[in-house]
Structure formats: C-alpha cells, structure tokens
Amino acid sequence: MQQPEPQSFDRVLSSMCTEPHPAARGAAERFLASNPGDPATYETIAATEERAVELLARLTSHPTPIDATGYVTSGGTEANVQAVRSARNRHDASDVNVVVPESGHFSFHKAAELLDVGLRTVPVDDDYRARTDAVEAAVDASTALVVGVAGSTEYGRVDPIPELTRIAHDAGARMHVDAAWGGFLLPFTGHAWAFDDAAVDTLTIDPHKFGQAPVPAGGLLARDAAAMDALAVDTPYLETRSQATLTGTRSGAGVAGAVAAMEALWPDGYRESAERAADNAAWLADALADRGYQVVEPELPLVAAAVPEREFDALREAGWKVSRTGAGELRVVCMPHVTREALRQFVADLDRIRG
Image (cartoon, rainbow, N blue to C red; front, side, top):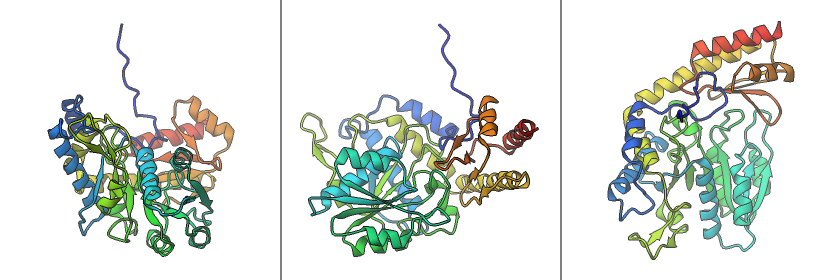
C-alpha cells in the first residue's frame, strides 16, 4: 500500500507550527528511540535536554542569562498544566485559584479541571491585553498563580508582565508567562516579557512553533529548582528514582530536534525569520485594510480581520487553511513557511471571491 505523504504547508495560514529546520529533522531522526523520561538509562538524550534548557533560558533571559531549570514538554498545554500544578502544590491555601486573562490559552481551562483549582478569568482592555486593575481585584490569599500571555493566540498581544508579576507577588502568588508562540519572536522586540524583565517564576516557550523544531517540542522553564521539585514523584522501578515531568515516556526526537534548531538559528536566523514574518504581517494587514476590511493592528506577526462569513467559507473551499478568532475575525499567522508570494495569492483569491 502506498504510504501517505505529509500535508503541504503551502496554504496553511492558521497554524502556529511550521516546517522544521533541516538540522532539526536530522537530529530528530537520530533520537527516535531515546526516552528522556528515564535519564539515568538514556544518558545522551538527558544531557541533550540539559542543553535544550540552557538554550531556552538564554532566549528567555536575553541579554542577561540566568540558570533556569525545566524540561522539554510535549507542547504549551503540558507546560501550562505543569505551571499550574507546581504553583498549586507550593501554595498553602486549601481552596486554590488561578487568575488568567480571557486571552489565555484554553489549556488553562484543562488545567483547572484536571487539578481541581478555581479559574478566575479576567477581562482584557480594548487592545486585547490583560487589565491590571481586573487582575488586582481578582487575586486573594487563595491565588496560587497569576498568568500573563506573551503572544496571545488570537491577536498576538503581550500582557504587561512586570506589572502582573508585582501584583502576583504582592498577593503571595507565583507568576507564570505563557510565551508558547511568542517566545521565539519577542527577543527581537522591545517588549518586557521574560525573566530578564521581571521576577517571573515559570514560563512556557515552544521550540516546535516559531523555533522551527519538530513536533513535539514544547518547553517549561522555572526560575528556581523548587518549582520543579514541587512536581516530583517517585519512580521506583526506573534507574532514575524520581520524575518531575507530566508524561513518563517522552520524545527524544523532540529534544534533539529542538537543540539542533536553536543551535542553527539563534540568534541571527531567528531574527531574520521574525523580521520577515513581521514584514509579511504588515503587508497583509495593509492589503486587507486597503480593501475596506476592519483589521486589528498586528503587534506580533498575526493578522486578524473582520471578513464576512461567505468570503471566509469560500477561502476555505479554495484550500486555504485559515481560522477564526473567538469574536469571528479571520486569523492569519505569518509563520516561517508563509511566504509573500503565498500571501499575494491569498489576497488574489480573496479579490476573486469578492468579485
């Protein structure tokens, strides 16, 4: 039987994953059978994961490096669940809650259900960023964690992380930043979002998104070891006697691919990709605005525009992989695989559909 071929990325405009860097592909294939979930047995991939954490820490504390700890997760959902779990386990209150802006990823709803913690969702301002006054009103002695988003999945917005961190710590809570998508873009902007900008406790950042690593390769980082210690459970039948990760067996391919991608691309390759993506997003936003659509001004390379349902459906029928925001706008993510030529064709199809 003929083996299926992977789907082309040519018309994929909605995904926050992209094609892996060639070096990442090769590294992933070499470590397909390695399990970083048992580091005492699989020592080479364990050392490679230490390198992955070191490289991620360099990204998220640029230009001043810190000695962060953490591990390579299956993706942003696992990292966010683990951040909530760690904060819950370290908090004294019996009735724990987590404060998340309404722009937060749906993984926090999963975390709240799985971990039996209260989820307090607070509004965003007119520019889709967390309202600090609403966060301050929502926290109390039972708040274990405050979440800020650095590169929201619907509008690419960055919350005021230093101010949110102050609010969290004043309330006796921990601070978590979800930079799953934005983390590989933000070092080349002027945003205050990471360890070097505030006393953030934990941070999510995914190499398999703009980092151009193979799937699965997410990342959870912590400022100090206590955050990871709070996640540890005994593993008596393994050579490694405890484990802080959520899954047991994990992808050595993802770990090795992440390291290969970061070593190949940091910093110049990522900078070039970020600048090209920003230029593409600005071009598309202008093209849509010129045609009379209401466009949300892009902050990171993500474009949202109010496109009528008939036109949106016709774009899907033409083969374009596009999605909607919760409010119904067309949503296009300018990932490294998205070329200017593809966007020109996209706009040409939109013109044809409009007649």
